[in-house]
Length: 528
Image (tube, rainbow, N blue to C red; front, top):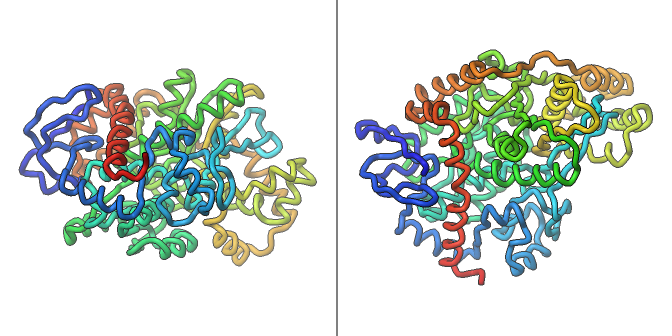
């Protein structure tokens, strides 16, 4: 049975959740125990009947049906009536049917596509990686919004929505983020016909802000760049103090983010691994909110000898050195350890130089770079034509996999998984900035960048974690979450000392959430 964590009555007003209530029922899978205490559930499934009725009515009026986790994993379970409607709908169209395109298995087309039997993925060959090991990444471009974060946001949104805690007729959904998460959240909220507030650093790419203006009701730009998350949290506290119409979905602490990637991304990776064969050695993922790395928790249960490597920018080595700093790998490395990061299950930390990633997006996308890769390196034209599927953090994930393969001396029968979170669609302004500051990209640049940043990757700036190195990183959560955000210390300790019970308790909530979604849809009454 999942545990509930206590918070004293005198601190009730400081509980960092949006549902402050007396709970009478635990949320274990198979049993229910009565409590008369103030609680902070890991994922709160307490029903709010009055708000739930309004939400059901809103969904009925706006033709909204909610997908289950089972359907996101296996789109064959999606009702035929919805599949028929999708044949006429664009991938990014702001219509509720696109909730059912929150899956790794969309057909890779801009409009009218249905689903593939297996996730979209791409293999990086030795000509590019410089290692014999097979490096395979799931491709995030073919989600609505062009990034996999739309899945994480929906994982956070579903439990409050189907329990009536989040009321789209009254609440504005607040999405604190460093970029793609608030894009995905604003998109999901718009599909549900509710207003949203996007919060992100002012130095994020122009494309993010331009697109957000088309869906978000309000955009708040906070000071700084990718790693300035404290400023985002400060803005959230300000909103909580001054407004009573908001519901905050914090990707760094909402376990719906973890659960989407554990269950949906993890299963998608497993299917690719089994299809491709070979010895699966581990998953390498840069961490921003630490949601995607939850897929490694699932894979390690299926493949017990596999490893989980967490990545960050060398310019902001928080996990590696308790360090800090600004960097240019958008979407990762935020000067703190997210609440939802299962640190005790992480085997390695790898830091990536942001200079490597910024030079490689030019190699992969500039005409002179692509020509060099085809004519001199011997990469196939088909592969090179698809390198724009790799955004900045996707390139960092490849570099992580290369360093991981070199460190463990992996061979041609070994397989390393990662994720290509988004594409270059959101970073064309970064290419323009590079051309303006560095000039035209030439063959000489391509030669230098290929050999320096790909073939020249070393096993420096990485650490295989011992038990106490993991504990050191876990302790860093204290300063953000206990001191700043006033989370309960008891829960922090349970994450470590009751590790298996704590994390498997979260993982086991999927069937219960799917049951709530199914009952919600039945009450809406749109799908027979």
